[in-house]
Length: 99
Image (tube, rainbow, N blue to C red; front, side):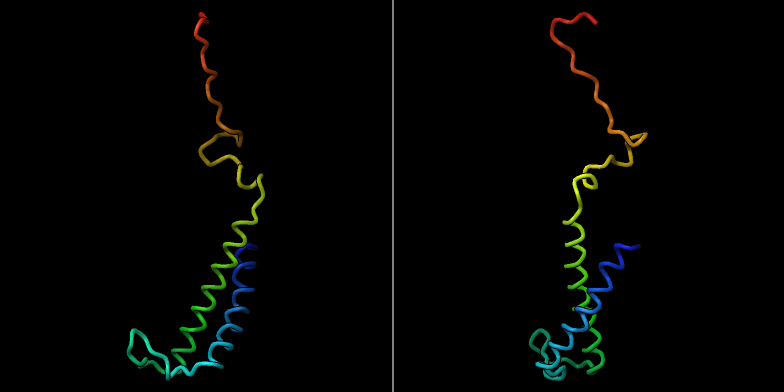
């Protein structure tokens, strides 16, 4: 839960700032989508723009959290290995042994 807050809260702020900066330059009624003018209301365009900025910022924050993991967290035993210890493989037999 803490990691989700680390990702979503800063990305929410960045999404709001990004939307404000974008829409101070561009008017929502003058935007084109696939060569056609948008028929959405200003509020709809503002909402879509905010959620897109938030999604991009959240993806960036999630990638940062993913890449900052330490070696112990990356190399911890998986769920299929019992007892929390790595699964042991049988020792290879030597060519001349009699066991």
